[in-house]
Amino acid sequence: MRRRNGITLIEILVSMAVLALLTVILHSVFTVSLRGWKKADNLLGVTSTARVALERMEREISQAIVEPGNTLYCLGFDRLSPSGWRTGSVGDEFYFIAPLNPAYDEGSDLCEVGYWAGTDKNADPELKRFYVLDDRKQVPPVYFDFNFATGSSTSSHDFALDITDLQFVFFDRNNTPFEQWDSRNTGSPEYGLPPAKIKITITVTSGKGTAATNPDFISKNFSTVVTIPQ
Image (cartoon, rainbow, N blue to C red; front, top):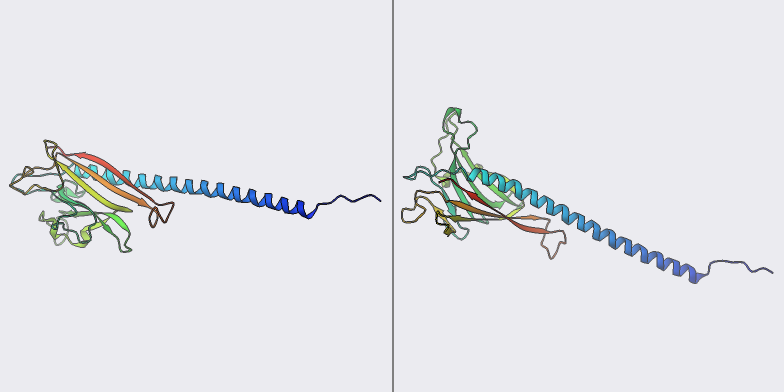
């Protein structure tokens, strides 16, 4: 009598073990690849956010105007200074006057402008832009007084999301660095002058939590140096 060929239980178990091992390996490879793609995508988003924010800040700050007699002035606050103007600021602050008014056909083209870092209504980090127009076409007309401290909360709006820190370093014409700048201060070398240049550093994040709790979390510093014509 001829014996029938078949698959034994041991062969089935070995096949299942090999299949399970291959599944685990493929899953691990897929997970690592997906995580790498996600992190690269987050890095691209962080870099794009930083590039747009820094280019805009550089373009506007480079037009800052200071006038002897302090009719037009600029002020930079260090985060540790008690005289910073924005409640809830998590970084440095810088305020200046610049000819940025898009509707200057009837009045001044100057604007009060400033940058500071805080949080939005959902407590998410963001870069904020203080902006007040000298718009004389409004009724009643708005005449800003070059006193940044009087700006209402509506004068600051969201500028860039996911900014967790903002730092300014100010340099005079001798390339001496300052943590603060006050062109109104008669007893300092910055009196009546804008900084010769400003180093801006922002910290941009992507993902919730921290690097310890989220493998996709990214926190990266980006810097640029702005030159202001004297």
